[in-house]
Amino acid sequence: MSWETVVVSPHFDDAVLSVAGLLARREGDAVIVTVLGGALGGALSAWDRLCGFASAEETARERRAEDARACEILGVDQVVLDNPDVPAARLPLDDLETFLTEHVTPRTRVLVPMGIGNADHEAVRDRALDGLEKVEALERWAYADLPYAAAVREWGSSAAGPALADRPPVRALAGRHRLEAKTWPRLEGEEWALKRRAVLAYASQIAPLACDHGEFLAMPGPLQHELVWVLDG
Image (cartoon, rainbow, N blue to C red):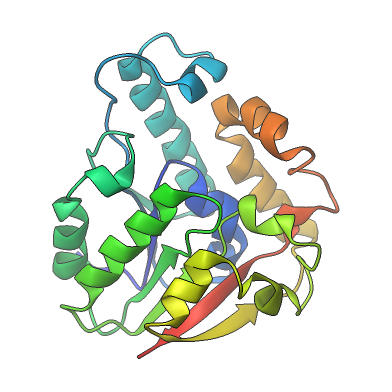
């Protein structure tokens, strides 16, 4: 099976936080591929304890169910890879490359995380782009990771792309590709309501995210804006 839009999401919720509006505006079918979707072996992580989970197995099961609800709200397919939620740089992520080589076609637009604010995102980005070197895709885009990217005061304006250009993940990618920042009008009305519903499907994450990022779900607020870089070369 192939899709016209493939969004690579390091963790459950990253794709929806960052590009739910873009997915709502898309043409054709789409899928969100969560890379670190498996159960974490051993002790529960500090983040998952904050989310109220009692075991790694419960964490993976409930977060997968949250992700399924968010995908249903947006009308996109869900694919979950079985890599444990540990630092991505430690993992081979061969299943991500296999997925991309098997499902990406010349009509597929692939979105990967830029890696702003999160080392796991950057590692997943690089592995995905390595895999895409072996296939012909319609377009390759890197999306600004939310809520991390919204820390720049220019967020929400046409100056956001230049403001983020000095961030190490952006500089590193710009050394290998020509990047063109692309923004969309602010999400309003039904578009914003749809994204908000999809984000709220990740109910276990809302309180911890608010502790780290403040009023990230406010309206007006950072999630109403989305930014991608088109990769050329």
